[in-house]
Amino acid sequence: MVIKIPLLSSGYVIAGAYADKLRRTMFAQLKDHIKNGEITAQEVARSVGELNRMLYTLLVEKLKIQKGDLVRIRINYDVKDGKIVWDRATLKIEAFRRIPDEEIASAVEDFISKWDEIYEKGISYEITKIGDTEDGDEVYTIKLDGNEVGALITTPIDDEIFIKKGAILHPTPIVIEKLRMTVPSGSSIESVIEEIIREAQKNPRYVSPDEARKLVNYIRSRVSASPIEYEESIEEE
Image (tube, rainbow, N blue to C red; front, side, top):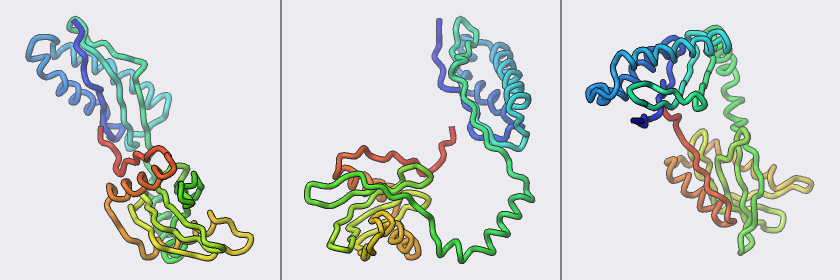
């Protein structure tokens, strides 16, 4: 008999604690099956011990992960005839190295000294046109580090551009609306929109992530672009 078990995940945990977290999680997942006699506690302890020994080789010897680094380990497994069977092909490892305290302190000190300058500059987004609506408006997507995090719809008026409405999801959900600016000769519309967004960041209208996401996806739908399924927080498991 084969029993399908949910994904075994360590969640985000420091590398020095991954073994204990996986052991506790696995025993929690199999608690009822142990109680029903479908598998023994000894077999669970044996199999998770085997997995943890293999992971030590991968994390410490191969990847050179330190105890203070953050990791997440995920793997599928089944219970077959009272034995654990690991689905090795599903093993996934995420690792985030710990930054030394002195390096963080130095970066924070430099950041504080440039606080006003950084605030004035704002976050630089990449603007790309993705289509025209049936009534002549233009729709642009807003990207940050290559990821789509917003959208806006504009109306071109001679040598000006009028932003009817837009929204940005990350790092803070805001709405931008009813803003206009002259497009200087030789400048691109995208560069003017970037400037408008920089100015809007100084006096933003904050909204909930859900409100911003709905507006972004409504704007994208005007040119039949697929919706953005941006996640505001990191999943725990």
